[in-house]
Amino acid sequence: MRWAALKAGLGIIRKNNFFYSNSGSWVKLEAWIIDKELELKPDVQIKKCPTNCNLCVKSCPTNSLAEPYMTNRSTCVSCLTTFEGWDMPNEKYKKEIDSWVFGCDICQDVCPFNKDKWTEDEDFPGLEELSEHISLEKIIEMDYEFLKDVMNPKFWYISKDDVWRWKTNALNAMLNNYEPKYNKYIDMALHDENEKVREMASYVKENIQ
View (cartoon, rainbow, N blue to C red):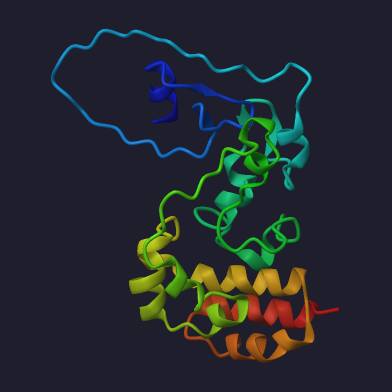
């Protein structure tokens, strides 16, 4: 839909491969299939990326954004924590993922064209209540019904069949930013019902410095 929006003259694609309108990249795209002919009247009044700007490329922790307009999906932190990264103990970039548990916004956060563009005009439904349940420790404690019925509808990039990934991601964050208080939860994960979680907990246990 990003490229469809570009073709429709609604905005541009910047070097971090995100679609930008006058609101920066913090936009939601929706598309419809219609049965009418439309006349294209492009009127894009958005400055292009400066030739010498590569902040997004330099900030990418895994060098997934290898060069402007070129992203390697298989090494992108956002993908590794949601669509990719099925084997976290053996994931090449598990250290670079750092404390990310879901997604990654670094290349958007550093973009000058996103400065002061984020607005909070509407409340995210149920966010305040949900935030009380989210921390690295609480993710490890979550039962799988809660992950499927409560977490998945809000954070659907991790599918219902793969909600165990919340726990492997949380364990990876615990290892990358280790504190003794995490020991209790790492031990708890060693007995998790999911094999992938148990494997990651065992890896973390063995590699705590």
